[in-house]
Amino acid sequence: MTKPAVFVENLTCSYAGKRALDGVSLTIPTGASFSLLGPNGAGKTTLINILCTLQGADSGIAMVAGVDVARHPTQARNSIGVVFQDSSLDDRLSAWENLEFHGLVYGMPARKRRQRIDAVLDLVELSDWRETVVRSFSGGMRRRLEIARALLHEPALLFLDEPTVGLDAQTRQRIWAYLDQLRRERDLTVFTTTHYIEEVEGSDQVCILDGGRIVAEGSPQSLKDEYARSWLHVVPLDAAARDTIAAAVPDCRELSHGRLAIPLAGADKVDAFLGQFGSLLAETRYEPPSLESVFLSLTGRELRDRMADRHAIEQAAGRRAGRR
Image (cartoon, rainbow, N blue to C red; front, side):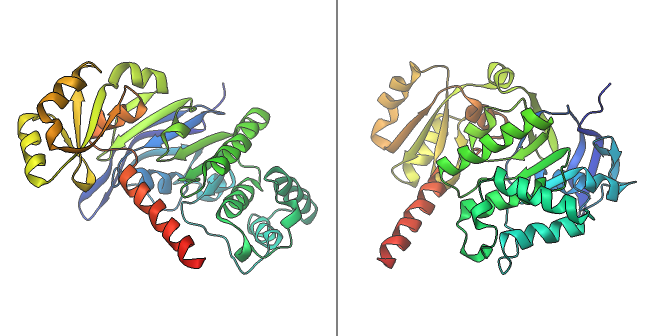
């Protein structure tokens, strides 16, 4: 029987008396595409850090590729590759030098190292830039190089912490195409945290973590079948309008930037709500049953702050205009 890629049982971890993980149990089959979701402070980073041997747990069992991460951390590290949310490349070195250093750290023989560097650079379409200093790379090129580095020593399990944040849609699609190809060819297990709901839809298994506990787990479709509902996202004209709506709809959810999410029994309820409160609203957006609505229903928060995204895009556009 094939050992699971990840096995976690009753895992707990605390900081300053506060539980970051509270009895988490989880099994991920080998070769699966797994997505871990949760609001900020849910415990996602703590769980990944424990599985990657970067910190210890207070109690419980954590195993990767059949290896206990607490008892045999070095052996566990040989089984995993990690792409962190923030770039950890040395931008003073070339692409080849970054990979060469990684191979040396993992004790790869020289011949094997050269073969694997050629293979992973070809995989992420960076062979023509092997001698180029990373400082000159675009964000997408850096992300692709980080994935190449994580795959260099042929891990059984790949951890991706927000791997495509800040990248354009085309680059995100290309990266996921690489990973899907590797899963088919090598039975690679991919463990991802992401705020892009379209990247979650293709997962085999989704786990939602909140307050250090697993609140839901299953395939994307099973989660939608059980928890999805319709929501109307609204931007009130002012604080008084917001208070009026919140008082009239006690089960609404308070979002960032003064917005509200109104639960609806169906799309036909939108007209009734707008008929009553439409004059108090500056903006509305209907959210049909989806994984996004599952996340909102279970955590009371959005998977991704769309208003913040829009603000970041506007800021970037302003910076580009200022350079012209």
